[in-house]
Amino acid sequence: MRVVFAGTPEFARIALDAIRAAGHDVPLVLTQPDRPSGRGLKLTPSAVKQAALDAGIPVQQPRSLRLDGKYPDEAQAARQTLLDARPDVMVVAAYGLILPQWALQLPKAGCLNIHASLLPRWRGAAPIQRAIEAGDTETGIAIMQMDEGLDTGDMVLVRALPITPEHTAARLHDELAELGGQCIVDALKGVETSSLVHTPQPETGVCYAAKLDKAEAALDISLPAQVLARRIRAFNPVPGATMQLAGWPAPVKVWFAQALPGQTGTRPGQIVSATAAGLDVATGDGVLRILEAQKPGGKRQDIGAFLNGSPYIVSP
Image (cartoon, rainbow, N blue to C red; front, side, top):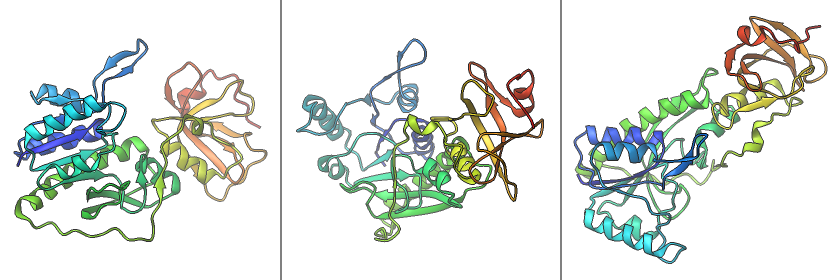
């Protein structure tokens, strides 16, 4: 089939590669405009744009698709390019722009979205991170027939994936990206054979995955250890989690930690124990064992290396 693809980050790039590997023709890619990146703030193409250019696929980067919006000329140019591409279907994955009704209706089979949650749980911008933060034991991929709502369309294919205590957002992202690529290929087979079954989303169980805010990085040590451990995993790698420890002049970035069951600490933030097995810190409820951390101005280290030469660590 002729599949127009709309996506921006690495999660979407993996799906684009899977679609092409399955033999579909991708006549056009839509992606976000290049963004400043790195210390020099050099304009950098998205992962999807780079993959499309490497494959010789035309790329369009409108700032909006609303014909009556702030950039009507860009939207109109994108509309004409889409018409010229004559898509059978459009696949959307973490694109970052809202598709107006004209775009949803333009492909013969409409638009399919690759969403990284078990809808209707975790509609919105950060489903991977919010699932870990909430303590969910499973997540997955939902392929959805898009409508004008926010992740409200009918589901056409759903596959679950367990969330373990070892999953960080980075690791879960990679596993879901691979699963998303497999799912969209299977869904496109269903489009070809007219065998997709459309299932409306349940009206119960709806919740929204709010976009991550940098302010969330600073953790409140008075929270329970279980909550802190989940947030540390959810915010790895972005925005990262920081924690103020007793005896330290500046917050420490924490990359991985575990809650110690059945243990209690003293005042939140106090160091309970500091050994190569872990840096144990008292919280509002229980003890948090930090296993990977980063000193201000330093690099990520396992806790043994982190503790070497750390004069501020005080163990009772």
